[in-house]
Length: 265
Length: 313
Image (cartoon, rainbow over all chains, first blue to last red; front, side):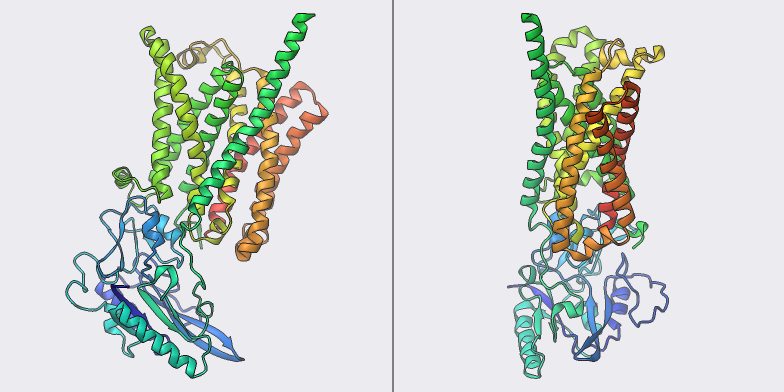
């Protein structure tokens, strides 16, 4: 598959959250006031002006506590539900394959926020539009057009984030997965290679996706849409019309018959 | 997650309810009028007039729901069949246009005698168009919610059916309530002018027999909706156990069991069944029908709250 991508390798990530700060700085977003909640994970949620955050998953594996880091941001799906369900067509793909929301066209209906299998887009209450990671392609702040890599990638000290051609990154990811398997991580997996027709942000995981809090088999929101329309329309016919036909028509027929019999007498 | 943090909040909740009642009451009154050989024209007109009010409330709430309400016109420069909200916007606009033209033609018929021929020719055709649009409109709300990635909404195929069943209950109940109100209003002298303008005469009543028939249809529809709800919950228990727990034993349990199942569906069903099977005095029957209809209308609102907010927890 052509296009660009970002490869994230949690096994190299130190969770310094430099990517979070770089994203805020480059996109000119204000800092989010937070409080300590017993975890280094901070802020606790994505929002209209927090487009990337590191998740600190505490998981018990083989009787030992593991601290697994995950990048929580837009996965830039090839089969992007957000783009499909947008009623105004404000969500499109860049030539690199990243998912971009046109802030001059979005009406802030929130349909994309409910459709995203990763629950990424959020309403920016101040601007009235839905926002998310734009892979540094926002108007006036387009790093990719200038030949630079996304700000989060640029800021990553241990090179846990790599930016490049997607095909090359798939090959790199597969090599790392093979190395992890050789070291005993039998569930190691390249997340995003095939999911939703291929994601433009891929993860090298040393365990099952669910251990990292990722959906095992993400589905597009529109997967069963035709079926839901058909079931709905059939119900409208059965529940909407049949009881009326039965009660009203039967009663009308009965009263007509009674009148006819009365007339005959 | 708090209510203010939810992407789909209070205004969309009321919008889905209002649009459901508008389409269901149109659909039901259209069929009742057709099946009665055109004898229930005033009931149909009541449904159209009040449906327009509900739909306008729905449109207003839909606009308020948008982050940029003054950019709503962006929805009407593109048609996106794969987007349920886009389709819904077009269907709702079409429905309002058709219902609006019908209302204008009916009123114009009484104001300007020359328009009588046009009104009599156009409104039957328009009512059929409105009927088809009502079927689409009653279906769209559930499909909109179901075409998402929220487990409570999307993991079964039955959510549109549940919304339709509930909308039909509310729509039929609304027809009963508005008929009772109309029958009271036709006896009030100062309302005569408005009734004459809207219906051509102030000297009419909705037949009590037809109100009883609608109540019987409501009993069947409430039973069908309870059945759909049971099937939906059963399916959900297998396909999305966490969402199932939120609904039946978690944060939404009280609203689900007490509000939706008890107050909104089972209780009006039992009250109406009491009149149907046992036979009660006419005065008691009228009070019971009115009370159970009110509960069924409220039940539609409760169902949408439980599902819409429960899905975002």
